[in-house]
Image (cartoon, rainbow, N blue to C red; front, side):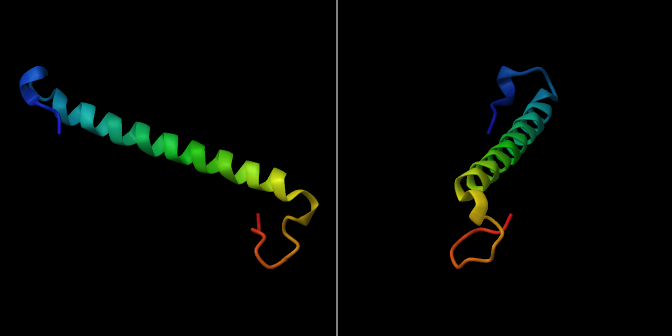
Length: 56
């Protein structure tokens, strides 16, 4: 929660929305980076349908 007394009237909701959007963007970038790292780590085995290997 953001203390409204520290902000101009109405800014609290805008800041809250920006924080949520920034978190969602960071999560999306992290997920993409992790998927890329997994593809690189799996190398030629990626997508071959081997048990325990992710399919990209």
